[in-house]
Length: 254
Image (tube, rainbow, N blue to C red):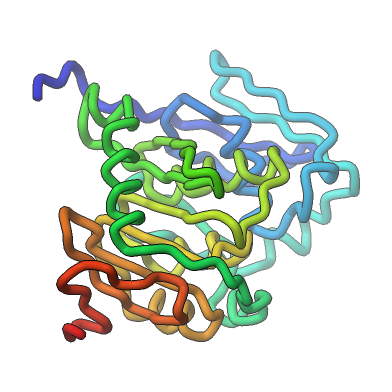
């Protein structure tokens, strides 16, 4: 595979009702989706209608968001910051205690493991920024009809925010979707997915111990190392059926 160039990242300031939240390192694509996803993930909005407008100024490196309700900056900025691990470093204002207050998942949707692996392969083939330059992360939604939507970014958590923003803006039912990601599933990644309500999350790599604990607590099916014909099931709530020879649960085969 011949790749051209390097992955891009830009410092972009998120400004909500006139208050600068922070400057984020982002890939300059699907920024409106990212703004919706980040604001939702951080609890600043609950639905699309909470946003009156989003204005992206690429030259100035700013995203201005106008909310329908007043933004209480004093309350928001007194919350403790939690810096995210990994590439495209970000910040979240949700603690582990906050995340445990999220609604538990009760989806009855079921899938075959081979289907998740097939969609993971399709996801890889439909990630243009990664195919062009490498060094990019992606997040993918598998719709109920099998079609997929992909968002990419230099940061794995940014990519997840972008795909959540896409889902939110399109009023998608999270319990009928699969969320796939290229990145390690850490607690802040799991919290973003849990906030939206995804019932099944799959990654091409590992999940952290804290993410697994949260997934178990919130009844989320969490599958890691989706590669070729293998996977590790970190949790098992009956939504992903093993139709292949080997699937590991919590590190052991069954």
